[in-house]
Structures are given as C-alpha cells and as structure tokens.
Length: 455
Ligand code: GUN
Ligand code: FE
Image (tube, rainbow, N blue to C red; front, side):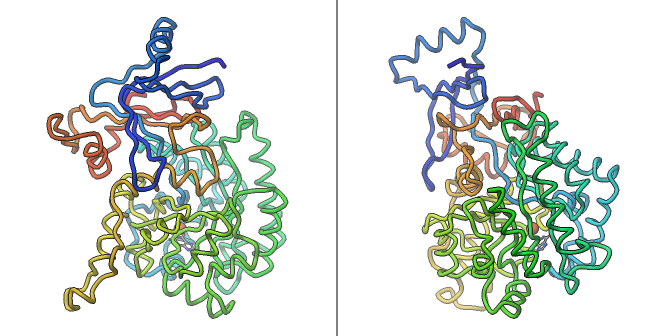
C-alpha cells in the first residue's frame, strides 16, 4: 500500500453515539486513493518506526498544540438555490414561504449565469465552514442542476445532487413545475446518467439523488416513477417528511396515512434515503424508518421557523436510527453545520423543559428529551455518514479521508480555550458552540486538500 501522506496530532471522532474518542499524537495514514489505510496510536510498537520513516520521506504533516483533527462535517439537507435568501424571508409559514418567496427564487435558476454565481458562492462557503459532504436539492431545471454537480466536482466537495421533481399542478405554480410526469422522470434519468459519467468522477465523489420535493408537490404517478428509477439505478433518494402541521396533515388528508407510511408504500424508503425534518414521526414511523434503514436529516434551525415543533432527536437516537444534521439552507438561516449542532442541543433542551411558563413545570416539557454535544457531534459526522450509507464521518481505516483541522490558538476568535482548565472533550464542546470559519484551517475530501483558512 502506498501512503500518500500522514498526519500526526490530536484526533477527535465519535464511533459510538454519545461517546467521543480522543487519540493524542495519533498517526493517520492516507493511501493513494484518499482512503485512511491505518490509524496508529503512540502505544503501538510500530509507531516510532512508522513516524520516523514518514518524517524522513517528507510526508508527515505534524499538527501543532491547539490544533485538532476531526472528520469533515456532513450536511444532509441543503437547498442550493435558496442560498441568496439565507437569513431572510422567514416571516411566514411554510406554505406561504414556498409560494411567496421560494418558488419565485428557484425559478430564476433557468438562468445558467445566475445559477453559476449562486452555486459557486454556496459551495465555497460550505467548504469554508468545514462541510466536506453536502446532500443538495437543486431546482426543477436539468441544466442548472448539472452545473451544480460540475461545480462541486471542480471544487472537490463530496456532494449528492438532485434535480427536484414537482409536478402536482394543485400545489406547484405553473411557472415552476415539471411540464409532465414523463418530463420529470426523463430529466431525473438524464441527470443520473450525466453525473455518473462525468469525467473525473470515477471515484463517485459526486452522486445523483432521486428527489421528490415532498408528497404535496408530486402526483402519485411521479412518486411511483421516481421509486422505480431509484431502484433501477440503485440511487440515493431525498425528500421532506412530516415537516410541519400543514404538510403532515395534507398527506393524511390525501393518502390517509402519515408521510413515512406513504413514502414506504411508494417504495421510496431505502437504505439510501434521507428524510428531511421528520418532526411529526410516531413510534411506528421510527420503526418503519429503522426497518428500511433510511436516514433522517435533523434541521433544528429551520424547524424553529417552519416545523411548528421540535424533532425528537433523543428518541430517534435511542432507537439507533441513522440521524444526521442539515442546515436546510434557506429554511435554516446559516450555512454552518456547527451552529446547527449547537441548535440541536438547544432545541432538545426546550423540548425537555417545555417553553410556556404559564404551564406548570411538571406538565411543561417532555422528560429525558435532551441530547448533548457528544450526540450532536456524532450526528454531524458519524450519523451523517450512516444516513448516506457511505464510508465517511469517522477517522478509521477504510473510511475516506474527509477531514478538517480546527485551530483553537488563533487571534480574533470567539473560542476561549484554557489549556490548564479544559480537557479535549471540553475543547470539543467549545468548538461546537464557538468555532467559526477562521478556526477551520484545513479541509480535505478523499485526501485532497480543498479548502480551509490556510488554503
Ligand atoms: N418542503 C417543500 N419544499 C421545502 C423547502 O424548500 N424547504 C423546507 N424547509 N421545506 C420544504
Ligand atoms: Fe428543506
């Protein structure tokens, strides 16, 4: 095995949900394909020889005091075209927000020059925030969705990209929908073929995704046709699931069942499916999702604006569901997945404590609903990788070297680390709450250095 390079330093990752594994002065060896070939701890009797050989060959990157190697962040849910409205247009409920702001903005991506400018800015921003993998909804347009895939590949970000399917004339405006079921299916097929055959995409860094926007925007024929395509191509699937009162009730009225059961009926729940939000899922829904080995994108910031409730993260994690995090740009306000880690913790505390002080303390909240920074970190890394069914999110042999270096010792940072007070877990907790893009010095995908403040 040829090792391309190796790193030596303090690494932090989360193989087990709720726990953090720290290895100080670990050697992480990366092979020619950008895959971690071995992690050698200082206790190993091979450590000294391996390290001096790497130094001799000039292939060792030594991290300094205050720097930490972590898996790259995995954002399971981003609406790429909504980037121009991030942090804006948050004053109305989901249905109105789609019709008044979001569909008009997404319709602009018929214009390839506009799409190029917006998508380039977004991918650069996500990478700078340490996001090594993003699962993207694009728009209904085939050509600008191809362009998003091109941009991710050119910049080196791992990406899963879907052309949005939305053909239901009752829910989608005439100016912004698939012209017909057949057109939506044909364009989806063309996109899958296009991404799979992209030059320089031999190692599948960019993957296609079958993307029914959500049940309200699709006819039953579209849902069935998309499920067939996903099966034919063994392709990822993404959609929204039981997000808000309005959306959840709409599906019950139309199909007589909740989103999860309906999506399962249409064969859209697979081990490569990611369900965004899922705030209103029941115990039965959780069991169905587990049985189908599907993933969930928990989007805590977006949920505060559009979901009318808090996703029961603790319950889902206790059932060992594959839960990761999503920024949901631009239902979510920020491109930072670390901020969403913090928000996931905060939301769980509101769920546990309750929010209305006019209700007695005993009645106000939902007992044992909290998660902490360890679970949030697991979701942002390991859980995201599991939801996508890809070998990413851990610093472990056989996993892609998708990683970031966080530097806590820089000037002009909100991070206040005290070497004589904080152990590495304390530092991780502080990173989650207070690290910004200036602390993210290096970003690698599949062993390629693609970004970070040092880049
Ligand atoms: N449901 C259908 N489309 C969307 C969208 O763009 N954002 C969110 N948050 N929910 C949706
Ligand atoms: Fe969304």
